[in-house]
Image 1 (tube, rainbow, N blue to C red):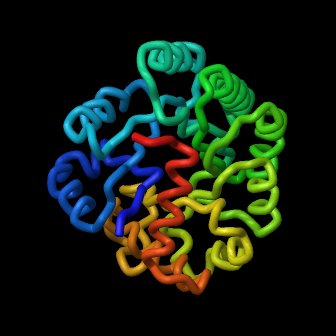
Image 2: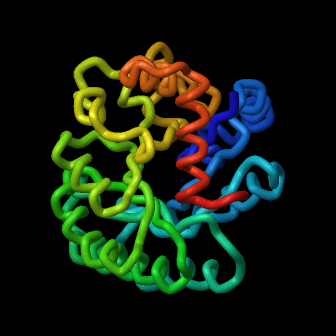
Length: 256
């Protein structure tokens, strides 16, 4: 069985010291490809160094994370634009809206999100969306771009059934991670009737470790726990979940 982790920060300070072991664990668990979302310019070098070390397994995105949108938003966006002009990326991400911690830079977040969605259309790239405490606003922001053909993944989906249905109606996929395994999160119920063709797997490592690894640093090898939970919800064999979600990931992010 082979899995694709559509979202993991394997270049993070928490995971980088154990990178070789982490990658060994991932590959031996069948995780053949790991897509790494960008955060901001400060983490760019670490992310690209992981990609250089594991060119057949790890693939960098370009983008500015909403939690890192500050007064210098234009300077950060200029760096993303420069990256996009220099080489190919599988996606622009992770981008979006996050009103959980702070609403100081809401207008800048909206500017950054809209700018990067337009770039995705210009470069014919999918996007990987981060949304927290802003699901309605995020869906509304995406709609006009989706009508023009923009596609991508709502990463770490933890919304309602209604949100899930709205997202797939726009042609976007749902990224399912460790939250799917949490008893009280409600994600299992929300995605129960969503067709498998709209689902992809992720870990968001080092965050949101699935049961039974809660409290530990998450890593791509743990994706199998998410797959097992999805197999249980959908009443499908595990190998079928692996095949379908990997095929879906390729449809969205391309062959790498």
